[in-house]
Figure 1 (spheres, one colour):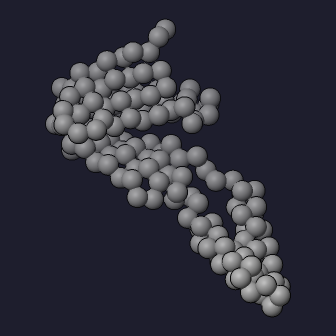
Figure 2: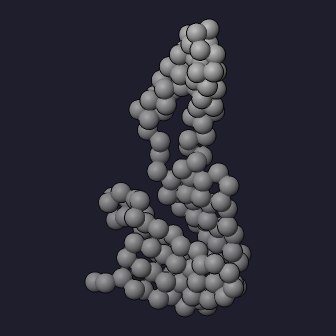
Figure 3: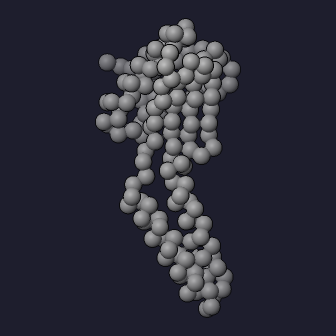
Length: 151
């Protein structure tokens, strides 16, 4: 079966980036202006302003949420450092709930995919595609699927 990837990342808006950039710039200028009068306050403002700038570059990666279904495994990537890959053989059951998808593992912590942060349009368009892909892979791998959605 063909690999399927779904990107559930909520994009960071241009306005949000501009606000953080303005905040960092103001802190840096305030730090430079205050360094002579109050060296501790000036250094603190300068430090926070300089720390905020790299954070702006990481905003798109901090908010990342990607689900990939392949023949060998299921992979869920969240944020900068959370990456979980599980082979299909270790999944004992898949539960489809109203706003959540749960992969029940034979050993270890279950994997939950939460749809509540998605917009209404994404829930109407992307969620059925994910459920269709999960069901297809589960049928191919012989994993039982329990649909707990009402209606």
